[in-house]
Length: 432
Image 1 (cartoon, rainbow, N blue to C red):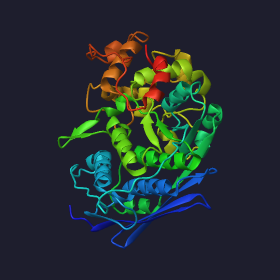
Image 2 (cartoon, rainbow, N blue to C red):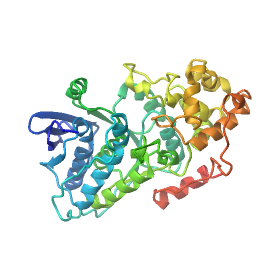
Image 3 (cartoon, one colour):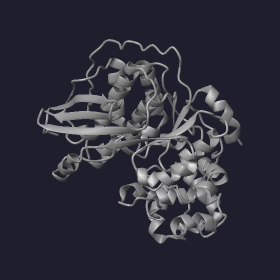
Image 4 (cartoon, one colour):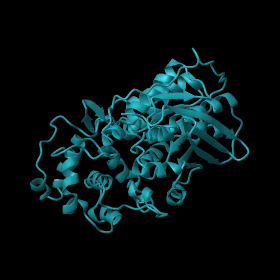
């Protein structure tokens, strides 16, 4: 590959407290320039300027992946900000593995070197005499974050939610949740679309890593300590293998990312902010069961996990009923909800009986091809769910033939990375 540009440049970042906006500037060879912004639409409390600056730098470096991928310049230059070796290694790892699906779709080498420059031997520690308190739960519109909310609602006093973008779609859901909420609006540089039309590389980025960095800024600005996400154990399973490299669509939702980000935060801002997933011990199937019991009746008309709801021009959430995400969610909820209630999400349609989705379900079940490149569950839990669904719809046993994982129990808890004082109060709710 002959790169069109030699340098990708992290030019500048600036947090304007007056208009509550972080502006990020990037470029290629002093020829192309990009500007992205994050607007924090809420009131701030007193905060550490040093901690905020380091959090802003983190988002600056992580959000740059959107522009770096366009031309993959061989040299990365950072004009503002400092990285020690641990920080440089962290961003190199997240870019490399988070762009795995991008490399696959563009038929590029997934081992393409990505090197972040080291500018300091060690970052100076930040004095955090009194750790902040309280939790911020990220809201994306789907069932998983709602399960987190319901698990925490009765055991945490200082609980709030936050989100990035899609305010019209998410507002009814946020209102239904009924907790304090912090809105963040992201504006990425639309000139990137024109470059894509002209042949620049395009594809999947580790968006959850960008959101994680934004969440840390929110926590600092509003005086909360914990940034809580809702990524399950299923996010650890690779989607496919490409050039003998495991490609995971959900890499930035995986335990590997969570652990790496925790170490990065510890190194850069100390104990000021903690980041972890509340649902890591759970399978998607167990989350679906908990949502059916504790969330569906409350949120059935205001939630959606369908990606198309966020890609369309619609100002409300919906289920398109034709994508892999819809197919998997329908399958996962089938054993736990009445048929009429579940079909009401999809305009009365039963997705398990839709011939158009047969290839999708065969992929989800590992019968042919690879898993869809989407946020769906593991093959073994899809098979367990289909086995349960076949007890309701016996014809499915003939349509989809596969071996059940003999020792698999979707209710068994896996390892987690949350603090013990957080895990213990919810353990009785998620254990069987």
